Length: 326
Image 1: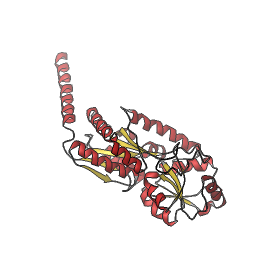
Image 2: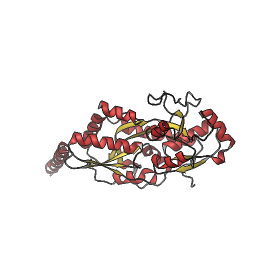
Image 3: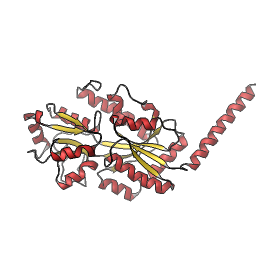
Image 4: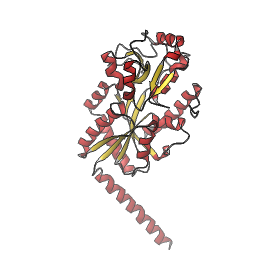
């Protein structure tokens, strides 16, 4: 009886191995979908469309991009977390994957139901203001805010976003009074109000706000990187401006349902890594204000978890109750 049970167990294990192995060998044999939790034109969308183009060429399969906004990016995350774990539905996730569990007691999905495959990029951010503000540095902006905080508002992409947390850091370090936060579903949605002056400032990904800096529609005061950006060498860093503690930047990467077979995860990781090593892809990301940043093995999963711990401390240090009803 025991021998029969052991034989059956071994047969089932072999069958599972063969099935997953065969699936991995044939992957992908139909179109793949990349779900983007932000609006068209933002950093995540730009990267997803670049990845879709190159992965499609690599695989000889169609790769489509689907924008699903709202819910602090949790609508898109839930769509992928509850999708079939077969590698055909990917999430182009952002730093909200680390912050949402901090800011939301109840989530429409379990964060453990998604696994990080590979980081695709990091996104430097810039503090920008409407040109009508009589400021030309972080220091002069801080002085201006302290004189009339009630008249100023800043845009973010919602609770727990990189924009919000970077502004929290600046407010804490510069001892700024509260200003009005105006949340949008994506960076690009907030730009018309910023350009028109209805919102006066933001800390936004360079990939999104860069064209408006170049056109003069907004004025850039500092970037969050440790060194000046080659694409914007005239913009000082926050550290140069006297605020080295403002060190938040955006990032993005590919996630899949955690039940996805390991061979499929490895194939996805290899394919994404291959695309990110292409010189013209790296240059296109630089031109868009981003840096290609592929990770090895399971490093991205560890990075997401460590970011969650680090950003929880940022929130605590700012004295913010993430679950307080606004």
